[in-house]
Length: 195
Length: 195
Image (tube, rainbow over all chains, first blue to last red; front, side):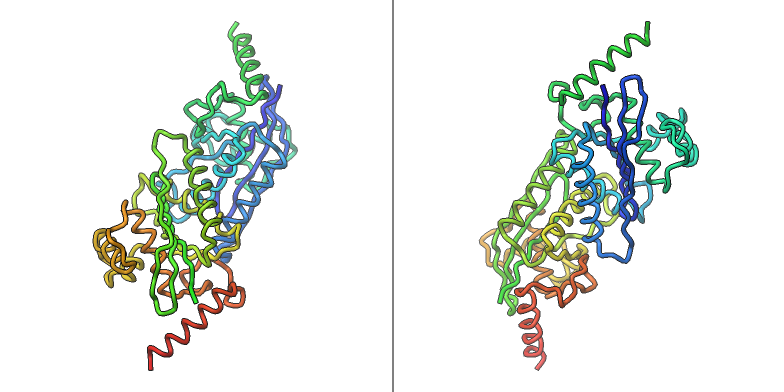
């Protein structure tokens, strides 16, 4: 049983998109990764439209069970935070239009999940992502690696929509068949591990 | 010749939408006004979807020549700015999907355009909006009045897309027939006034 997660590292200049399949034994497969790029000389509406079209096409192509997005904080970087928030709003709305549950994860959660340390460097995250996915080289740019790390984080948490990290209303009873089966299998695996 | 402007005061809890028709002699007619409301106990994706659906329906119903949105600053109010930016991103993308030009105006510009003072209170803006539109009472809540003020500001500027305030790439040559005619009439009126 596989959970398909799309991870999004939102940004106006570079918006990282990744898709991974996570099995109940946590084995993770990279399905696809890309970065939507726009430049500061483009008008804002064109840049946001590009991101809107990019995420729409991505969700249509990969049909994920859940979308995991980096939680944006106002305090992070004042010069880029507005564009990042605008991009994240567009991504969340695109998922919501398709009734795909959305989960938010902080950068610290992602670093901790992937490397074991919430203080890990971007470099360390990239290296662990490469190892986890059995890739031959580190995904570039960093936004691509970050999107993959987000997707892995969510897949590994097995965070059912409705958990703390969720931005969605979908309760356990509103899970898709794939999600339900995955959650059940995850619970079994958890019991097995704790024996 | 009439320019139809939709004004948007973006916000996660209250997103004000207004539609006004502005004639070349600056006579302005209120066509419609509403506020999309969501509550903090709703999941983020539901709230953003509600705003997405609301602006989509509004643009489909009123088919404006241009959408004027309040420019959001990261320094404004840290606790609400992220939701405001996410909402504004969704509104800009919805306009861009329809190829409707988008213009951004700062709160100071709006206050100055409507009341003559960039330091005007919300109360003063509401009163002037009421007077300009020949209404019998001040539009409530303030988000509704602010959305109307934004639409008036843009309509009165006659800011052709491509001007400094624009977020769009549409150059003068890419104006809709209505916009072209309006810009021409505006130019004539300007010449007339300066005689």
